[in-house]
Amino acid sequence: MAVQYPLVQAPTAPLAPPVTWGDEIATFIWKKPLGAVGAFIIAVMLLVALFAARLAPYDPYAADYGAQFMRPSAAHWFGTDEFGRDVLSRIMYGARIALFVGFVASFVGCTLGALLGVISAYAGGTVDLCLERLMDILLAFPLLILALAIASILGPAVQNVVVAISIPIIPRAARVVRASALSVKENPYVEAAGSLGASRPRVILQHIVPNVMAPYIIILTAQLGSAILTEAALSYLGLGTPLPQPSWGQMMSGAGRRFMETAPWLEIFPGIAISLAVLAFNLLGDAVRDLLDPKLRGGTGQIR
Image (tube, rainbow, N blue to C red; front, side):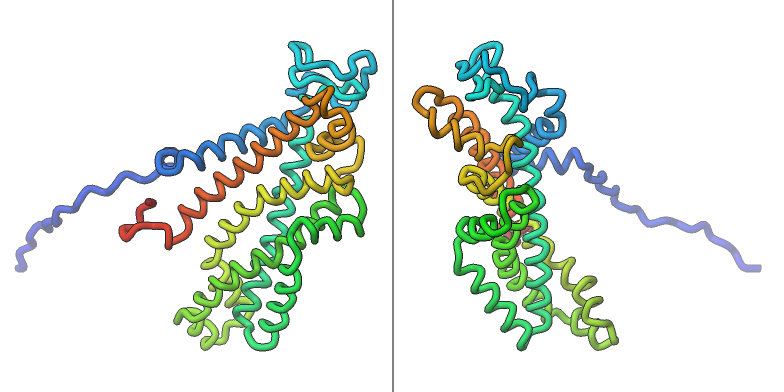
């Protein structure tokens, strides 16, 4: 009769506690305080834009000719414009236009550019040559000049502003993502997938696109501030958001430009809003780049 001996389990090391979202956020704040400041400003602007109807003290469209050009006071913190409209309320509602155009234009432009960059890198040959020459043509024009030309053709409207800003972003995203896709394309698992009969769209979507998400996110966050600034410039020139919708760039144009000496608050407060938004997105973009770019990490993988 066989003797059964009790099983003895080898001692195991204690498992490390799971990393929570709170730990990730605390680490990000500790490592990248400027990026955290930018994220906080963006979060506040998003809340103001979402709840502008409840937070705004006045109707941004209602004219009060008895309160024209009132200086900043307890009743009107940011003063009033030439129609007696509250400037603070219009800035709150203008955050909706700025953030909507910034997020949508950056997402559309960077996504299309990333897809074109991946296709160009993977296809190679004539396809790569034609797409790259097209990107060179678009890159020959500064972003604002090309957006200005497109907006002047399409006319002033929010959706036209999104299109006008998205198109100049496409070649910038395409160049960045293509450079990363060229290195990913040479990996053995990509060649193995093709050898096993996987179609080109499947190889691109399942094996290349997931490995170029880091540069895609970096260029996306980097273009957000530029998109908001471009929208403000187009609105200032009369090619952006049409009247009477409040827009930060539009508020600085018109009466803000004509009455700059007698009512400087019409220029100062929208300008501060634009500067804060661009600064916040640039700070967050720099922090995200440092987190995702391997070249900016130390040898142990920790953020410098």
